[in-house]
Image (cartoon, rainbow over the protein chains, first blue to last red):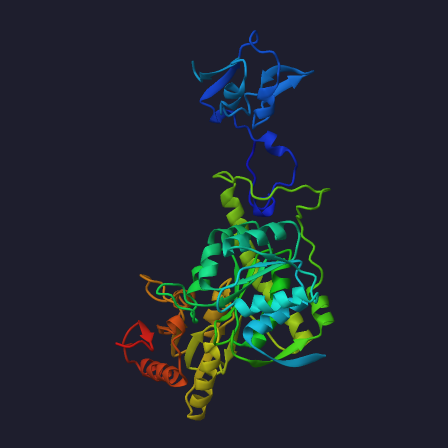
Length: 93
Length: 393
């Protein structure tokens, strides 16, 4: 994303576009990535509820993937998963 | 049409606030500001104003409530002094950086410690880099006039910055003076209706206040604040001209008193300017070409106008009612002196720190300063570049 000059942006650090946090990719912050074991997962969607970055992608009631462009690797999903179906794996391994 | 009332500075501020009738006022009592909010709370209780008054448990909460209210699109005011302003500190900066046009009365009082409730400018001078416009008032009339104008200045679309209107604790806040008050309707028309450009309550145009702003954009937002301050002087002058049409009283960034042919000039802000005027009058009768340059707007600092006003002066003394510990001199001195740096012929400028903790300053003491300026004008070296006036050795 090309960064804008001071004359082109709203004053006061205001965000005037609802939901534009999506444009800000935070995936590079991650040191550990969540990896889901599809066999253990029963699609209870607890991880989807808890994820602070809306990075659990759900289609038709089932978990499809993790949005790694935004997932910061906080690990909340792994802690909350009742079936221990999510593991945090160090990046680069 | 205006009416004439006998009011203290605090009562004057409350009267201006009654006419402004802000949507929200959040404040916490502190001497010597207390009577401003006390009287205003009576207006609220009597239903004279429609203001939502938020009674908070501290000044930190007062300014926080003001930020929330202003972001929601409310015309918002508060009032404080000294340690109350100090407790607001982090939110004072946030109000300016969110570009919220809050108007705050600051009744100048010495910062503790040792604890002291009387006047000096250490509180508002400490906040000089917070991004607020600062307007200093000499007397009760200026308290009234400055507050009415502050609303227009803060809310101007080219500015959108919070404004502090200050006046000296006890000397002005608790002294009764003759004050001309405009009709309620005239004030209402003059200030108009506040239409926030980015209201949190405008659900058709959603806005987020206060998101994280790191090395990629924070600097650009600070650059915008610098720009708003650059645009403020012309707005302050425009509002001043319009206010003159309404009231007959004239306002600029600063006021010159007997400056046309002045050779020996004092620079001062606040109530002391009035005392200096008396000294100037007496010295003029003796044939001394004495003048006063009164700083009304300290932020943004009118450095070009000051350089122009002091051009040709034989000697200048700046009176600072606060100390900037470890600095070369007081804050007013540093900026006045710096303003002259680009001049081809720079006048000698000395500094006196005076009046700390409410120490009285007398006409005689001011005349002694002019006497010393006369010696400097004749080529004598200043006794001290920066000295204290009225302190015991």
